[in-house]
Length: 310
Image 1 (cartoon, rainbow, N blue to C red):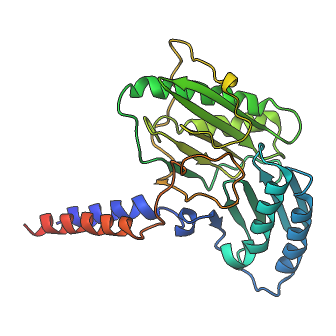
Image 2 (tube, rainbow, N blue to C red):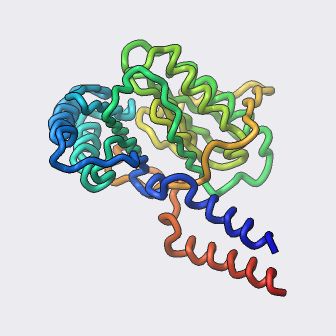
């Protein structure tokens, strides 16, 4: 008699773990605490948003504060100034009204940029929660172990390069060959982190691999302070065929944690992206519990209910 509630709970956990808003695009976390729109915080947040937006035309990272409002943005390291400015302008103009109405804190992830604000200072502190894992539903059909080793090795190199960069643009990409395909990897930290904290954040993010996405054709891990991503198509600018390296015969596999940190999800293509033309993002999928996904869940529940009563 207890099997049905347990299985139904598992289905709910799989699709809506944490805040449902986390699984909508742009992916975001909204603090539960809210204030009046006439409060000092939201008055100062408007001023802060203007500061951040105005600095996005000449910086890839900027932090600012108008206490009690604190915020920063980070653009992807391969973007041009126009794309960075456009993404940050969209994020700041909609953050406190459309994306996270009246919340005193938010983490908002776009494909091209990232925005965070809070009523408490968070600068230079590694933040790994809330986190989001986006996984491509397609998988390679053979040589999964070799594929995971090559992806893991490429990501380790990318993480090392990103965390060793000077200044506030801690960003790196790397390509590796796998059979007749190319694996593209990217890693980046927010510009307020030190090199050691950047390395700590990215290495902890990598602990999710390969448990999160073994054999999957693409995935990304999103933390408030850092992110990494890999795909089998170029999703960032500046890719040169000559930069593709052939991995050693025995690339070491990445270590993995006892359990993954977040459920799988996936974004639609971003209209703000300035990346080279490519196939639809491999991490694309329908919105949460809509269309075919809702039907799939309903069918699964129907099968469980049928088995329960038979």
